[in-house]
Length: 444
Figure 1 (cartoon, rainbow, N blue to C red):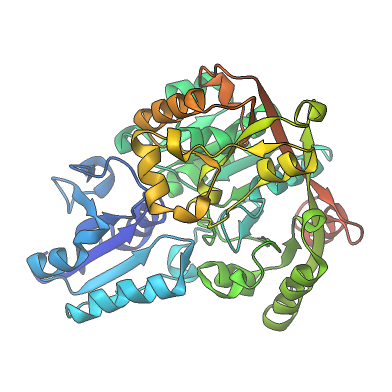
Figure 2 (figure 1 turned 90 degrees about the horizontal axis):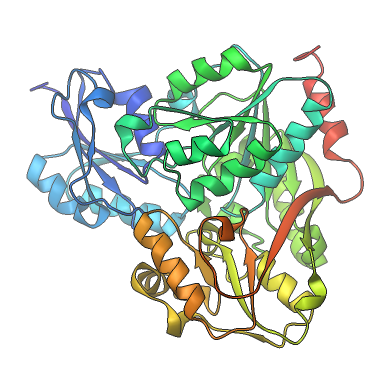
């Protein structure tokens, strides 16, 4: 490898590892000297991409550093190429990182679909988005229900969230709650897997998506790629479905690689129509029609339900929202805030004065969050900080607007209500009829 081009892969414990596996691994023309991790990834210090995953060219593995060390790492290792490999990043930030690399005499690349998508022997439906928090998960569940009602064996493969012991996360198979415990899933992972497992749907995730694809193909008639953030699929889709959020109109043109998803879309779903204003919806529709005229547009509602909504009225409420949607998704409200306002809460209690440890750091990094509590749970320390913060807030009621029941993982000493949200068609055309028309010829 003495003549190999030295490379740093910038990532977030997901796309970066996949790009290494399919493009750089076992390639004698490149020497990957380091990964760098995005700010939201916990436990970076001393972490390695292990030898058993890195391959024969890396007998000691590949070290992982903080992204802030990029310039010094380029100088230290005389790096010639920086590969940007994570998602839901504003274009200004992408070019900021590119400028750092180029100022240090390194080239800067972003690997595209041809270099990174794996071809399956089974039909693949990809569910992606233009931003984090558009409603991919509820749409994935709806698609699974449509296909299962027609007798199809559906397997969901989830975008990676590889924050633990990478050597033990090569291929992860989830069919029961015992599997969540065995694989030591974070809150973020459970949020994506639990609803699917509750429906009897098999879920795969992990680190090596070539091996994952082989395992999934053995058990599936149809594979659903359930994307993360606004990343493009790891598998080449036969049908590419992309979610849009009219609460963030115009973001489909401003974030990497969400715009790529829009341009590739077969079906474009404008979600949350029931809580957005018409002008926002029309702006998103205009951008789709202008830039992705081939896409079939569907309008959808994110239907919010609370089991006992009458208990919210006149209460001082702590709202706990989905963590990633508030942090790198950039939202300042979610389903919990909408439910609190819809059902007459007297006050949204600000949790920031009560926040501890890693949650206090989260508020410092993402000041736009405001008086909401992001359900951060990438690590045991974050989960402990979340529990302590919830139990310290002086409120009458906790509204849990996360995709899972946090009270199953945390000991909460306050009255609580769960806020749920599900996919619902907003008139015609509906998802089922459009999906089945695209599937004609792919399945019998």
